[in-house]
Amino acid sequence: MKKIIQDYTKEELAERVKPPFRAKQLYNWIYHKHASTFTEMENLPKSLRAELDEEYTLHPLKMVDKQESRDGSIKYLFELHDGHTVEAVLLLMREAQYHEDGVLKHHPRYTVCISSQVGCKVGCAFCLTAKGGFMRDLSAGEIVSQVLEIYKDKGIPSNHRVNLVYMGMGEPLDNLDNVAKAVKIFSDMDGMSISPNRQTISTSGLSSKIEKLGRLDLGINLAISLHAVDDELRQQLMPINKAYNIASIMEAVRNFPVNQRKKVLFEYLVIKGVNDDLGAAKKLVKLLDGIRAKVNLIYFNPYPGTGFQRPEPEDMRRFQQYLLNKGILCTIRESKGLDISAACGQLREQKLSEGVGK
Ligand code: SAH
Ligand code: SF4
Picture 1: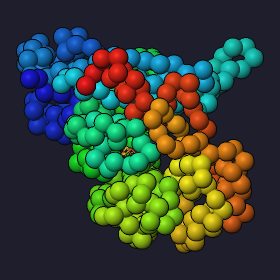
Picture 2 (picture 1 turned 180 degrees about the vertical axis):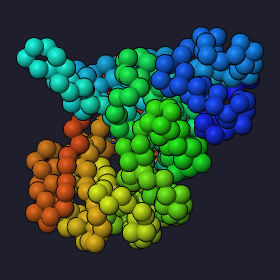
Picture 3 (picture 1 turned 90 degrees about the horizontal axis):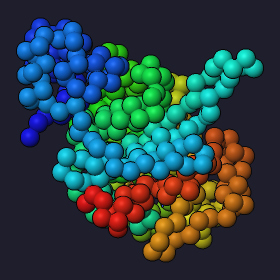
Picture 4 (picture 1 turned 120 degrees about the vertical axis):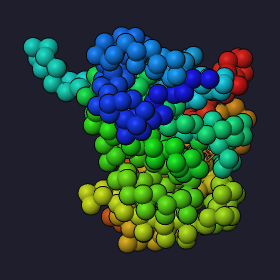
Protein backbone atom coordinates (compact mmCIF):
# COMPACT_ATOMS: atom_id res chain seq x y z
CA MET A 1 0.00 0.00 0.00
CA LYS A 2 1.18 3.49 -0.81
CA LYS A 3 2.18 5.87 1.97
CA ILE A 4 0.18 9.04 2.53
CA ILE A 5 2.28 12.07 1.58
CA GLN A 6 0.29 14.35 3.93
CA ASP A 7 1.45 12.20 6.87
CA TYR A 8 4.85 13.89 6.80
CA THR A 9 6.07 17.16 8.20
CA LYS A 10 8.24 19.22 5.89
CA GLU A 11 11.28 18.28 7.96
CA GLU A 12 10.52 14.58 7.57
CA LEU A 13 10.09 14.96 3.84
CA ALA A 14 13.38 16.83 3.66
CA GLU A 15 15.08 13.66 4.92
CA ARG A 16 13.46 11.65 2.17
CA VAL A 17 13.77 13.91 -0.86
CA LYS A 18 17.20 15.23 -1.66
CA PRO A 19 18.24 17.99 -1.67
CA PRO A 20 16.06 19.17 1.25
CA PHE A 21 14.71 22.29 -0.51
CA ARG A 22 12.62 19.89 -2.60
CA ALA A 23 10.44 19.37 0.48
CA LYS A 24 9.45 23.02 0.39
CA GLN A 25 8.58 22.75 -3.29
CA LEU A 26 6.58 19.64 -2.61
CA TYR A 27 4.67 21.37 0.18
CA ASN A 28 3.92 24.22 -2.19
CA TRP A 29 2.46 21.82 -4.75
CA ILE A 30 0.40 19.92 -2.23
CA TYR A 31 -0.91 22.72 -0.02
CA HIS A 32 -0.87 25.83 -2.23
CA LYS A 33 -1.30 24.68 -5.79
CA HIS A 34 -3.49 21.76 -4.74
CA ALA A 35 -1.79 19.45 -7.25
CA SER A 36 -3.71 16.30 -8.01
CA THR A 37 -0.76 14.31 -9.42
CA PHE A 38 2.99 14.14 -8.85
CA THR A 39 3.48 14.28 -12.61
CA GLU A 40 2.33 17.90 -12.79
CA MET A 41 4.94 19.07 -10.26
CA GLU A 42 7.07 20.44 -13.06
CA ASN A 43 9.88 22.03 -11.05
CA LEU A 44 10.76 18.64 -9.55
CA PRO A 45 13.06 16.35 -11.53
CA LYS A 46 11.21 13.75 -13.55
CA SER A 47 12.92 10.90 -11.75
CA LEU A 48 11.85 12.23 -8.36
CA ARG A 49 8.28 12.64 -9.56
CA ALA A 50 8.26 9.03 -10.70
CA GLU A 51 9.74 7.84 -7.38
CA LEU A 52 7.17 9.80 -5.39
CA ASP A 53 4.35 8.46 -7.51
CA GLU A 54 5.61 4.94 -6.91
CA GLU A 55 5.78 5.32 -3.14
CA TYR A 56 3.08 7.83 -2.11
CA THR A 57 -0.53 8.73 -2.65
CA LEU A 58 -1.82 12.32 -2.76
CA HIS A 59 -5.41 11.20 -2.20
CA PRO A 60 -5.96 9.38 1.07
CA LEU A 61 -9.61 10.45 1.20
CA LYS A 62 -12.47 10.01 -1.21
CA MET A 63 -15.46 12.30 -0.86
CA VAL A 64 -18.51 10.04 -0.83
CA ASP A 65 -21.19 12.45 0.25
CA LYS A 66 -21.79 16.14 0.75
CA GLN A 67 -24.79 17.90 2.23
CA GLU A 68 -25.24 21.63 2.04
CA SER A 69 -27.25 23.39 4.70
CA ARG A 70 -29.53 26.37 4.11
CA ASP A 71 -27.19 28.43 6.31
CA GLY A 72 -24.25 27.78 3.96
CA SER A 73 -22.52 25.13 6.07
CA ILE A 74 -21.47 21.94 4.30
CA LYS A 75 -21.07 18.51 5.77
CA TYR A 76 -18.69 16.11 4.05
CA LEU A 77 -18.36 12.38 4.35
CA PHE A 78 -14.94 10.97 3.42
CA GLU A 79 -14.03 7.37 2.80
CA LEU A 80 -10.60 6.17 3.94
CA HIS A 81 -8.48 3.64 2.04
CA ASP A 82 -9.88 0.79 4.18
CA GLY A 83 -13.51 1.71 3.58
CA HIS A 84 -14.19 3.41 6.93
CA THR A 85 -15.84 6.82 6.76
CA VAL A 86 -15.40 10.05 8.71
CA GLU A 87 -17.15 13.39 8.71
CA ALA A 88 -15.89 16.95 8.47
CA VAL A 89 -17.97 20.12 8.40
CA LEU A 90 -17.31 23.47 6.81
CA LEU A 91 -19.11 26.06 8.91
CA LEU A 92 -19.85 29.40 7.34
CA MET A 93 -19.41 31.81 10.24
CA ARG A 94 -19.88 35.00 8.25
CA GLU A 95 -20.92 35.49 4.64
CA ALA A 96 -18.69 37.31 2.16
CA GLN A 97 -19.31 41.05 2.12
CA TYR A 98 -19.17 43.28 -0.94
CA HIS A 99 -18.83 47.02 -1.55
CA GLU A 100 -21.61 48.72 -3.50
CA ASP A 101 -19.59 48.42 -6.70
CA GLY A 102 -19.48 44.67 -6.26
CA VAL A 103 -15.85 44.52 -5.14
CA LEU A 104 -15.18 42.02 -2.36
CA LYS A 105 -14.89 43.70 1.03
CA HIS A 106 -14.54 40.67 3.29
CA HIS A 107 -13.92 37.06 2.41
CA PRO A 108 -16.40 34.64 3.93
CA ARG A 109 -15.25 33.42 7.34
CA TYR A 110 -15.04 29.68 7.79
CA THR A 111 -14.44 27.24 10.61
CA VAL A 112 -13.65 23.66 9.68
CA CYS A 113 -14.65 20.93 12.10
CA ILE A 114 -12.51 17.82 11.65
CA SER A 115 -12.49 14.22 12.87
CA SER A 116 -9.56 12.56 14.63
CA GLN A 117 -10.74 8.94 14.88
CA VAL A 118 -13.18 6.54 13.25
CA GLY A 119 -15.68 6.16 16.07
CA CYS A 120 -14.72 6.85 19.68
CA LYS A 121 -13.78 4.82 22.77
CA VAL A 122 -15.14 7.31 25.29
CA GLY A 123 -18.76 6.23 24.91
CA CYS A 124 -20.72 9.31 25.98
CA ALA A 125 -24.41 8.51 26.45
CA PHE A 126 -25.66 11.41 24.30
CA CYS A 127 -23.25 11.00 21.37
CA LEU A 128 -24.06 9.22 18.15
CA THR A 129 -20.38 8.72 17.24
CA ALA A 130 -20.03 6.60 20.38
CA LYS A 131 -22.85 4.26 19.39
CA GLY A 132 -20.86 2.53 16.66
CA GLY A 133 -17.89 1.91 18.97
CA PHE A 134 -14.27 2.56 18.07
CA MET A 135 -12.65 1.49 14.80
CA ARG A 136 -9.27 3.18 14.57
CA ASP A 137 -7.18 6.32 14.87
CA LEU A 138 -6.76 8.61 11.90
CA SER A 139 -3.21 9.29 10.75
CA ALA A 140 -1.95 12.89 10.66
CA GLY A 141 -2.35 12.90 6.87
CA GLU A 142 -5.93 11.69 7.08
CA ILE A 143 -6.68 14.56 9.48
CA VAL A 144 -4.89 17.15 7.34
CA SER A 145 -6.49 15.91 4.12
CA GLN A 146 -10.01 16.60 5.39
CA VAL A 147 -9.24 20.30 5.30
CA LEU A 148 -7.26 20.06 2.07
CA GLU A 149 -10.15 18.32 0.28
CA ILE A 150 -12.61 20.94 1.55
CA TYR A 151 -10.36 23.76 0.29
CA LYS A 152 -10.22 22.05 -3.10
CA ASP A 153 -13.94 21.43 -3.21
CA LYS A 154 -14.88 25.00 -2.32
CA GLY A 155 -12.01 26.67 -4.19
CA ILE A 156 -10.80 28.25 -0.95
CA PRO A 157 -7.43 29.90 -1.64
CA SER A 158 -4.52 28.56 0.39
CA ASN A 159 -3.85 31.95 2.00
CA HIS A 160 -7.41 32.23 3.32
CA ARG A 161 -7.62 32.39 7.10
CA VAL A 162 -9.79 29.64 8.50
CA ASN A 163 -10.26 28.33 12.02
CA LEU A 164 -9.98 24.64 12.81
CA VAL A 165 -11.80 22.78 15.56
CA TYR A 166 -11.05 19.16 16.44
CA MET A 167 -14.71 18.58 17.27
CA GLY A 168 -15.76 16.02 14.70
CA MET A 169 -15.73 12.30 15.32
CA GLY A 170 -13.38 10.88 17.93
CA GLU A 171 -11.48 11.98 21.00
CA PRO A 172 -8.43 13.95 19.79
CA LEU A 173 -6.42 13.38 22.97
CA ASP A 174 -6.85 9.63 22.59
CA ASN A 175 -4.86 10.06 19.34
CA LEU A 176 -2.53 12.75 20.61
CA ASP A 177 0.60 11.90 18.61
CA ASN A 178 -1.16 12.11 15.25
CA VAL A 179 -3.23 15.14 16.25
CA ALA A 180 -0.13 17.01 17.48
CA LYS A 181 1.57 16.20 14.19
CA ALA A 182 -1.45 17.44 12.24
CA VAL A 183 -1.36 20.71 14.22
CA LYS A 184 2.24 21.18 13.07
CA ILE A 185 1.58 20.26 9.44
CA PHE A 186 -1.40 22.64 9.30
CA SER A 187 0.66 25.49 10.70
CA ASP A 188 3.70 25.13 8.43
CA MET A 189 4.30 28.46 6.69
CA ASP A 190 5.15 26.64 3.46
CA GLY A 191 1.91 24.70 3.78
CA MET A 192 -1.53 25.83 4.88
CA SER A 193 -0.22 28.36 7.45
CA ILE A 194 -3.10 27.75 9.85
CA SER A 195 -1.54 29.07 13.03
CA PRO A 196 -2.00 26.97 16.19
CA ASN A 197 -3.84 29.87 17.82
CA ARG A 198 -6.57 29.39 15.22
CA GLN A 199 -6.82 25.67 16.06
CA THR A 200 -8.88 24.34 18.98
CA ILE A 201 -8.70 20.85 20.43
CA SER A 202 -11.88 19.72 22.14
CA THR A 203 -11.63 16.95 24.70
CA SER A 204 -13.95 14.96 26.90
CA GLY A 205 -11.38 15.55 29.65
CA LEU A 206 -8.52 13.04 29.64
CA SER A 207 -6.69 14.92 32.37
CA SER A 208 -3.31 13.23 31.96
CA LYS A 209 -3.38 13.91 28.22
CA ILE A 210 -4.37 17.53 28.80
CA GLU A 211 -1.22 17.80 30.94
CA LYS A 212 0.80 16.14 28.17
CA LEU A 213 -0.67 18.42 25.52
CA GLY A 214 0.23 21.37 27.74
CA ARG A 215 3.83 20.20 27.95
CA LEU A 216 4.03 19.99 24.15
CA ASP A 217 3.32 23.73 24.23
CA LEU A 218 1.90 23.82 20.70
CA GLY A 219 0.17 27.17 21.22
CA ILE A 220 -3.17 25.57 20.54
CA ASN A 221 -6.54 26.51 22.12
CA LEU A 222 -8.21 24.12 24.50
CA ALA A 223 -11.90 23.27 24.77
CA ILE A 224 -13.30 21.05 27.51
CA SER A 225 -16.56 19.16 27.00
CA LEU A 226 -17.79 19.51 30.56
CA HIS A 227 -21.57 19.02 30.23
CA ALA A 228 -22.13 18.37 33.94
CA VAL A 229 -20.96 20.00 37.16
CA ASP A 230 -21.09 17.10 39.59
CA ASP A 231 -19.29 13.80 39.22
CA GLU A 232 -22.36 11.64 39.66
CA LEU A 233 -24.25 13.09 36.72
CA ARG A 234 -21.12 13.48 34.62
CA GLN A 235 -20.32 9.80 35.15
CA GLN A 236 -23.73 8.84 33.83
CA LEU A 237 -23.35 11.01 30.76
CA MET A 238 -19.63 10.44 30.21
CA PRO A 239 -18.23 7.16 31.59
CA ILE A 240 -14.68 8.56 31.22
CA ASN A 241 -15.44 10.64 34.31
CA LYS A 242 -14.75 7.53 36.42
CA ALA A 243 -11.12 7.64 35.36
CA TYR A 244 -10.79 11.44 35.20
CA ASN A 245 -13.14 13.29 37.51
CA ILE A 246 -14.07 16.96 37.36
CA ALA A 247 -11.46 18.01 39.93
CA SER A 248 -8.66 16.36 37.93
CA ILE A 249 -9.81 18.13 34.76
CA MET A 250 -9.89 21.51 36.49
CA GLU A 251 -6.41 20.89 37.87
CA ALA A 252 -5.12 20.05 34.37
CA VAL A 253 -6.78 23.15 32.92
CA ARG A 254 -5.18 25.37 35.58
CA ASN A 255 -1.77 24.04 34.52
CA PHE A 256 -2.41 24.45 30.80
CA PRO A 257 -0.40 27.13 28.99
CA VAL A 258 -3.14 29.39 27.64
CA ASN A 259 -2.29 32.16 25.20
CA GLN A 260 -2.38 35.50 27.08
CA ARG A 261 -5.21 36.86 24.96
CA LYS A 262 -7.23 33.65 24.98
CA LYS A 263 -9.50 31.74 27.30
CA VAL A 264 -10.22 28.08 27.81
CA LEU A 265 -13.53 27.13 26.26
CA PHE A 266 -15.93 25.07 28.34
CA GLU A 267 -18.57 23.35 26.26
CA TYR A 268 -21.78 22.58 28.07
CA LEU A 269 -24.23 20.39 26.21
CA VAL A 270 -27.65 21.27 27.57
CA ILE A 271 -30.15 18.43 27.83
CA LYS A 272 -33.73 19.09 28.79
CA GLY A 273 -34.49 18.24 32.42
CA VAL A 274 -31.00 16.79 32.95
CA ASN A 275 -28.56 19.69 33.37
CA ASP A 276 -30.49 22.81 32.38
CA ASP A 277 -31.34 24.10 35.87
CA LEU A 278 -29.98 27.18 37.62
CA GLY A 279 -28.50 25.02 40.38
CA ALA A 280 -26.11 23.65 37.76
CA ALA A 281 -25.32 27.16 36.52
CA LYS A 282 -24.48 28.18 40.07
CA LYS A 283 -22.09 25.23 40.53
CA LEU A 284 -20.51 25.98 37.17
CA VAL A 285 -19.67 29.50 38.28
CA LYS A 286 -17.94 28.07 41.35
CA LEU A 287 -15.98 25.54 39.31
CA LEU A 288 -14.69 28.20 36.95
CA ASP A 289 -13.53 30.49 39.73
CA GLY A 290 -10.03 31.73 38.96
CA ILE A 291 -9.90 30.22 35.46
CA ARG A 292 -9.82 32.40 32.34
CA ALA A 293 -12.83 30.67 30.89
CA LYS A 294 -15.63 31.18 28.44
CA VAL A 295 -18.65 28.95 28.22
CA ASN A 296 -20.42 27.73 25.13
CA LEU A 297 -23.90 26.34 25.70
CA ILE A 298 -24.86 23.74 23.11
CA TYR A 299 -28.37 22.60 22.35
CA PHE A 300 -28.60 18.82 22.53
CA ASN A 301 -29.30 17.74 18.97
CA PRO A 302 -31.68 14.76 19.06
CA TYR A 303 -31.41 11.77 16.72
CA PRO A 304 -33.60 8.67 16.29
CA GLY A 305 -33.38 6.36 19.27
CA THR A 306 -32.00 8.80 21.83
CA GLY A 307 -33.76 9.16 25.16
CA PHE A 308 -32.57 12.78 25.57
CA GLN A 309 -34.38 15.92 24.52
CA ARG A 310 -33.48 19.32 23.19
CA PRO A 311 -33.75 21.99 25.91
CA GLU A 312 -36.20 24.89 25.83
CA PRO A 313 -34.77 28.16 24.46
CA GLU A 314 -35.94 30.06 27.54
CA ASP A 315 -34.04 27.67 29.82
CA MET A 316 -30.93 28.13 27.66
CA ARG A 317 -31.23 31.91 27.92
CA ARG A 318 -31.86 31.79 31.65
CA PHE A 319 -28.72 29.64 32.12
CA GLN A 320 -26.72 31.99 29.92
CA GLN A 321 -27.98 35.10 31.70
CA TYR A 322 -27.00 33.66 35.07
CA LEU A 323 -23.40 33.18 33.92
CA LEU A 324 -23.27 36.59 32.25
CA ASN A 325 -24.50 38.23 35.46
CA LYS A 326 -21.61 36.55 37.27
CA GLY A 327 -19.19 38.04 34.76
CA ILE A 328 -18.53 34.84 32.79
CA LEU A 329 -18.43 35.12 29.02
CA CYS A 330 -21.12 32.80 27.75
CA THR A 331 -22.47 32.17 24.27
CA ILE A 332 -25.14 29.88 22.93
CA ARG A 333 -23.88 27.85 20.00
CA GLU A 334 -25.92 28.59 16.95
CA SER A 335 -27.32 25.34 15.68
CA LYS A 336 -25.61 25.47 12.33
CA GLY A 337 -26.56 22.97 9.72
CA LEU A 338 -29.49 21.57 11.66
CA ASP A 339 -31.14 20.58 8.42
CA ILE A 340 -28.13 18.48 7.37
CA SER A 341 -27.96 16.11 10.33
CA ALA A 342 -25.29 18.22 11.94
CA ALA A 343 -24.51 16.52 15.25
CA CYS A 344 -21.32 14.55 14.99
CA GLY A 345 -21.76 11.09 13.56
CA GLN A 346 -25.17 11.65 12.03
CA LEU A 347 -24.25 11.74 8.37
CA ARG A 348 -22.01 8.71 8.76
CA GLU A 349 -24.81 6.85 10.50
CA GLN A 350 -27.31 7.74 7.79
CA LYS A 351 -24.95 6.59 5.03
CA LEU A 352 -24.09 3.36 6.87
CA SER A 353 -27.76 2.52 6.90
CA GLU A 354 -27.79 3.12 3.14
CA GLY A 355 -24.81 0.83 2.70
CA VAL A 356 -22.07 3.47 2.16
CA GLY A 357 -18.87 2.97 4.19
CA LYS A 358 -18.34 0.72 7.16
N1 SAH B 1 -14.47 13.95 21.62
C1 SAH B 1 -14.29 15.34 21.74
C2 SAH B 1 -14.45 16.09 20.43
C3 SAH B 1 -15.57 15.64 19.53
S1 SAH B 1 -17.23 15.80 20.11
C4 SAH B 1 -15.22 15.92 22.78
O1 SAH B 1 -16.12 15.22 23.22
O2 SAH B 1 -15.00 17.07 23.15
C5 SAH B 1 -17.56 17.49 19.82
C6 SAH B 1 -18.74 18.05 20.61
O3 SAH B 1 -20.00 17.58 20.11
C7 SAH B 1 -18.70 17.69 22.09
O4 SAH B 1 -18.75 18.84 22.89
C8 SAH B 1 -19.91 16.82 22.23
O5 SAH B 1 -20.41 16.89 23.50
C9 SAH B 1 -20.87 17.37 21.19
N2 SAH B 1 -21.99 16.47 20.90
C10 SAH B 1 -22.00 15.12 20.89
N3 SAH B 1 -23.24 14.65 20.64
C11 SAH B 1 -24.03 15.74 20.49
C12 SAH B 1 -25.43 15.92 20.21
N4 SAH B 1 -26.25 14.89 20.02
N5 SAH B 1 -25.89 17.19 20.12
C13 SAH B 1 -25.07 18.25 20.28
N6 SAH B 1 -23.76 18.15 20.54
C14 SAH B 1 -23.24 16.91 20.64
FE1 SF4 C 1 -16.31 10.60 21.94
FE2 SF4 C 1 -16.66 13.27 22.10
FE3 SF4 C 1 -18.68 11.64 21.31
FE4 SF4 C 1 -17.88 11.61 23.84
S1 SF4 C 1 -18.80 13.36 22.74
S2 SF4 C 1 -18.28 9.79 22.58
S3 SF4 C 1 -15.68 11.93 23.61
S4 SF4 C 1 -16.77 12.00 20.23
